[in-house]
Image 1 (tube, one colour):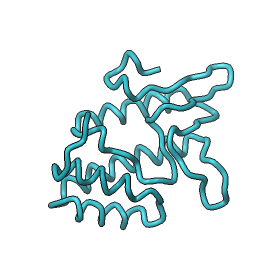
Image 2: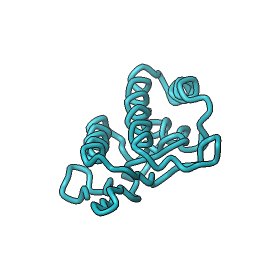
Image 3: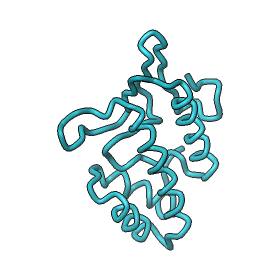
Image 4: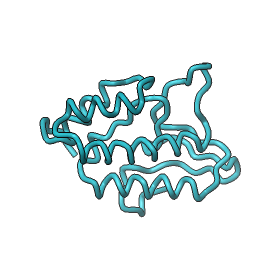
Length: 137
């Protein structure tokens, strides 16, 4: 699903018989979210629309495209991963608007999400979004 939407690169598979959303990159869990590929606020809003579309399906299972197991070792295969991704993107947008540079954005996101892993995704994304590094779109 999603090939017909505003962000075809952010597709996912919907398996109605299992009420499951599987794969794709719109959903992450337990890691800093890779934002470098969505370099404009509009593209991040489109990402949020994709997450809304997933939520509207009321899936019983959601397999994130990118995740690490949580503290007890289980994979976050629920709508909680969609909520996490949505909340992270909104926090990133808020902090990016306030941050004078990538270092400030990174610090703010680490304060909000001190236990997340994959800080390299945050660091590169922050540099791209703050215009300190080029990244292909």
